[in-house]
Length: 389
Image (cartoon, rainbow, N blue to C red; front, top):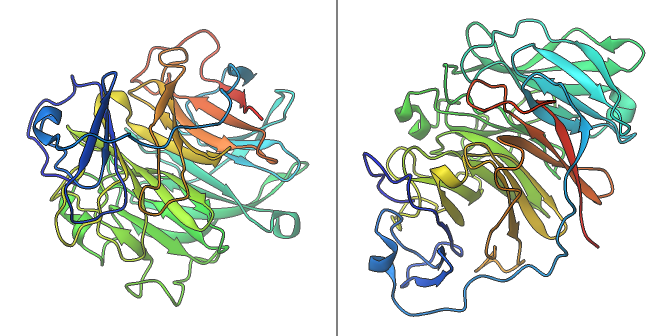
């Protein structure tokens, strides 16, 4: 991460990719306007000033090109998150209506119910959703929501015939604001629930390990603190500005994070890691902070949802109005290859991306009715992208 500039920085159209944090000179390769960085460098320094010796760049993706997106469902109201049920249908949250809807693979949309206690305002409302790993036994779904006083995580039963049950609070007291509420939740391969939060506009909270703002949280399905959490509370990592994407490559947690005026990020999350905000933004090469493995200018990304499928990390971009594919190399020293932008400007703002059961496709949501986009006919919508063999 790097000291953030106080103004500007939105006009450059490039991204940076780097390996695991190491204390040696950086390598940089300019590829058709794309800047690929491996090693360590200060993200606020202009690319020409950063260059040292040439390199071959990141690993290229060998995956086949994905198919063109096809509509699954249309006419939704600001869908924020998707979570798949075991039968292949998906539950979607609507931020401003506080509804959860069920979307079948044939596009049929059925209201599952309205979650009580949601107070939509600004970026807040009904946000993330996660289906219990034991859903076939417990029928539980989890939601991250903004209430009148805080952000919180609740869980409730869902039966297709009966709809949503009464919510039970799992975690509460997460600071809320009109902006930077985070909101992504997901179960990890360890069976624990993870949540990305925002700094709620009070940036100093991101460095306070006793606050749940500007963090990635980790908890049991009941909301208890796991014995191996690094600080004896729900905090798993800190120094985040606004985390809205969580995805796993094997046991490795990857998270997307909104920057301020300079760089958005993809981070490899380590227990107890400090990711620098508000001291740094982007790659900083400073002791005590974990640097990102990918950065973009904020105009190119504003990354929200993230998913792993087909050997790549897929990142939904709001302001960038595109889907990013980031090849995953499996090499801890150079974990990612060169990002590729797909469908730029075709569907407007993209909020979430999830991998469908079986991994043969990914589903996307648009966010063009969130007051920041330009709605298209049929918005907002859920799209499916078939992945190549």
